[in-house]
Amino acid sequence: MLIQKKILHNVSLTAHPQGCARYVHDEIAWTRRAATGAISGYVPYDMEHAPERVLVLGGSTGYGMASRIVAAFAGNAATINVSVERQPAEKKTATPGWYASRVFEQEAQRQGLFARSIHADAFSSETKRMTIDLIKEHLQTVDLVIYSLASPFRTDPETGTVYRSVLKPIGAPFSALSVDTGTGIIENASFEPADELQIAETIKVMGGEDWLLWIKALKEGGCLAPKAKTVAYSYIGPHLTYPIYREGTIGKAKEDLERTASVIADTIGVPAYISVNKALVTRASAVIPVVPLYISILYQVMEERGLHESCIEQMYRLFSTNLTSDAPTQLDAEGRIRMDDREMLPEVQREVEARWNRQIVGQPAIDGDLRTFNRDYDRIHGFGYDDIDYTKDISPTEI
Image (cartoon, rainbow, N blue to C red; front, side, top):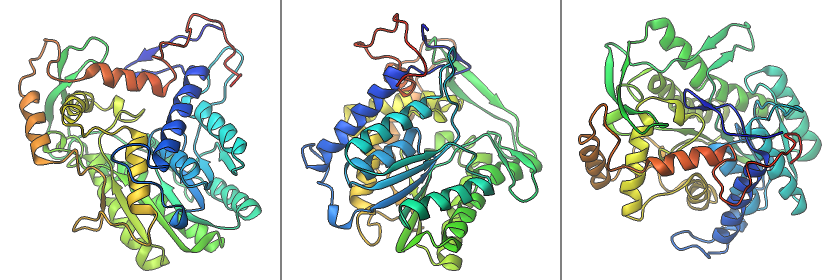
């Protein structure tokens, strides 16, 4: 089968198994080097205090996969991933997360590390029971739970009601610049405000309710080690994107997620933290209007200052400086871990805003790095590697 890149509305419909394998191998190789102190700007990994058994909810791509790689290949941790993925068929590719998980687990097993994935709906009670059974059988307990789930919908495990999330402003319509990532032409994106039901449903999908249910289930199942902690990933972003993100429906869900950290700590007794991460190209961020233009400008500004970090670099810094100690060291006044510290530097944001204001609707984007944005998005799906022959017939089931 000839596997080619197919993108519809910024969503990749295919994934290349060889390219997905290359992506994972590159991130593992970088992590191994960083762990020894061989990469400038990154401290050697503290093996003595590293988590040994890690559960990643949403660990097949993006920040979740990067977290799993760091835990295993810097800290020699046993890992379990829970995520929904599509398996390959004879004439259809798998999702990139299926290929990435398969390659990760092959490499982990070569290193003698336990690594399994449960490809099922992480929101369901049955999946939680399956995960608890797997932990009890092989690991007994876990000492770190990463919550990195992103989904357009969620089925309530008790009522069966299906909730759907929306990306909308609240209170008033919103218009802002965006970019067509295929043509590079600046556009104007407009959004109608969400109603109360849409706000509530988005919180149900992307808020903290499921995170709380996971930690309750793991605690009641006896699967949390005495010093276990949990971390959920969030994003705040710049004022440029506030109306559609932080002050919109997704922002309300993120606020709920952040409040849940205190609920988990106070009612279950498990230290719970929010890691506010940097804007990066992921399967989720690429389809949010306005965000690709912001990221492409941000990338160039941070690259020029030597501040840019990829997914794996950001997660290595999170683990090595905040998760290999009794408590994180990089907390803000609200108790959140701020991994977006470099993104939100005033001088960085001033320059991003200045370049944003130079964009003209109908004209090519300027003063940004859309090429790297598109390259990173392609590589998540296994495309864009010069040394892979994409004209060669391969089986989508072989990895």
